[in-house]
Length: 594
Image (cartoon, rainbow, N blue to C red; front, side, top):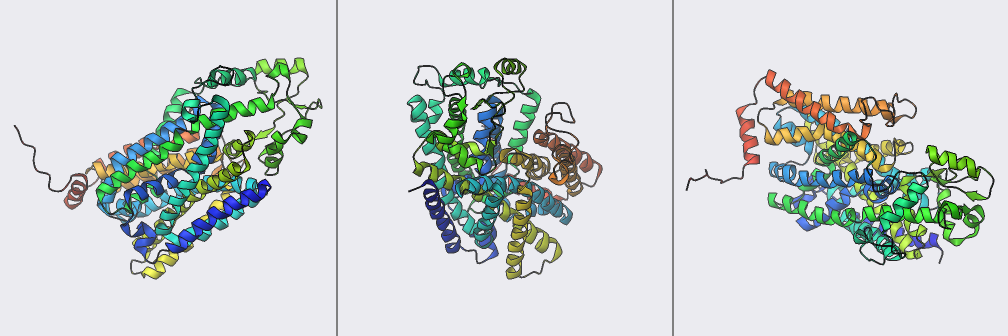
């Protein structure tokens, strides 16, 4: 059986499962559509939350960015994991206790303002649509490879699939679909990692194999450092980027995580406040299974790629020949990925070999002139393909490749569905019912939610055709927007009675505006190519890249909110009482002196 057929079987079986679950758990009421009837078990919700969380950025893109940068991109791991701890401790239980369907509804009620609710809807839509662009980018990469079509065609096919099961299932359907998707994606991520770890180090636990020895007795990371520095790249395990930007980037990811509406919505689906805490705990367990494996996947893949491009022991042994790439079965993966437009190479100097090295390194340029090279001949290697190509690069069995195909699609589609649900809920429940037409019938509200989700899919698909970066980089922009707009409003809404409606609205608008403008200045206005004035290689403010600006935007939000609140009317007493009732457990007596 050929690989294409195996891929179709795995992907087709997983899709049949997802769509079957969506039909079985089809939402029949607004309660089921928005919050799954508030009857989801904490373990089930934890697994669904993990799937919602581990998007194309985590599954497809993160290990690729770590592989080609090394230690400096470990901030993705630190930021996303640390943010989940913040979410579990500071937000999830209190928001569940408040008892509303959506984040915008909480902000509108807490800040006793329809304007605050509408501003929250705008912030939510901007962050969520940016996030969906990253997911659709991942969907296009996965479908393009495993259906052996172009990236654009793959993206359009993926959009149709998302529409099929997300629009009709609502939160109830999405929850149980995500449980199945988690099982698929975690299996698909860990099995290839175990195979490759055994190949390279003999250790079946990838996280331990990363710090183990290769067959030659040399530590894996030491060997990797030697290879990449020989090729003119930065040492893999060392810190090379700007520390300030790295700290701000990690902080943006952390507080952005805690402000993501599609993840927060999951905590509205459990029966009790205590279940919200347990859900968060279980989600961290399920997320850790992938996040502890990702650094090993990245490092081992980088080592395998370097060995394949220089199969005779480094530069002195000679680069891989064009003949080998064309005829050796070990290199078939390169021809297959070339069809997607995400991988390419060119024999620039006509010597019959493909030299892969850092042609921007001054020392390598001197060596290249001496050897007659005229530039890096692996001309394109999209970081988003690495995890999906990993089993092929390591020459693993066909069924493992098919499993990874299903896993990559599960990761992208699960998060896309959760984000689209957050967008549709914001439009139908918060904007239409909450502000425009409070008398709308339940049937009409469900219809408007599904139409909003369909429109969001179309917009995200269009923008996904020309994304502002790799999947994880695009997602990082969304985290920055959530960090600058939603997270401060939630924190001040729960922990401060001083912030009033005027302060909250001013803070959200200030944080969102400065962050969005900074992003557009670097990524193009409305993400339209070639409309940017700066780049992340040469940013506007010192060394602060657009992906790191969310932390600055959050500081602006907090500052403006407190200043404006201090200059305007005090929060009404009933709202102060509401905040106290949310924060303090009922029935708690005064402390006793012993």
